[in-house]
Image (tube, rainbow, N blue to C red; front, side, top):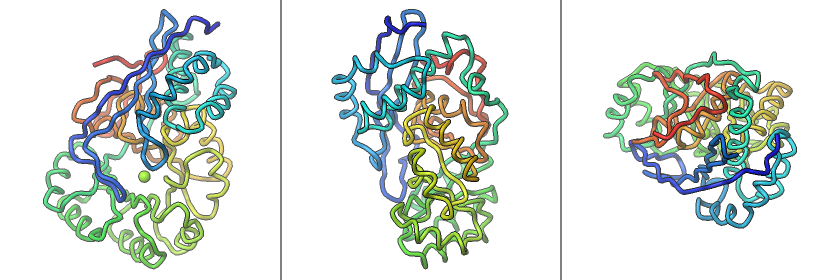
Length: 342
Ligand SMILES: [Mg+2]
């Protein structure tokens, strides 16, 4: 298959969340994502870049990169994903989310051309564990409304890392006995604080703890793990495939996200490395549309834990992709990603 007739368009899409999305380091009520449309004249493929301020500059920087290096994108190979990813890392070292958007669009196009859904092309399955639904940090007075809004979802992921973590948990536990997962987003700064936190959360029916301490305190995290009754899952520490070997001993699991790792090709590398190093796999997301969520879902059967709720946190999702029925991600049988505009 030749790729000489490819064309590429892009635009910024503003997506608004139902509630302000607050975590230990930031609070936003809308995000600007960059949507890519890659066409071969017959098929229309999609990609999405949802840049995180934690890792890179914003959408305007991505538009500049696209403008300046469009011809290099159109010259990328469609079928040799490994060499395409290596090229993406050379051409766009500044933006992991742009790498992800481009890689996703090329995979979507390939899947459409061969007439197969990507999960099938990847040898993955449609049989997925239930995804969690995220409860961001908020004033205590808003928690009842949020827990009510989350009624359909059996597993909640709670954002902590504040100076009123106990109050948040107390307010949540006053309303629900659902399985909870806790994400501290690097919010606890000392081993003592983190030890007290894990001990206390273990009594609150919490399943695991995500990124309890800053990513540059790996020795502290390893010390915490010796003590922690809860499994520790890396997120800010598990950005790229090359990060994984260094996490052995500090973490039980790793969170893979397309917008951090640079796309499906690298996500597959991280799955392989996780099996090699014995990490449990979690798959997560940023606040994203159904393009990004549908893309990550293609590999979701490799995960023990799923947190693919970015699209259902939105007031309005501009795209249709995988379904989400009470946290159950419903993969499609359509070729490629199967994305449609809403
Ligand atoms: Mg996280």
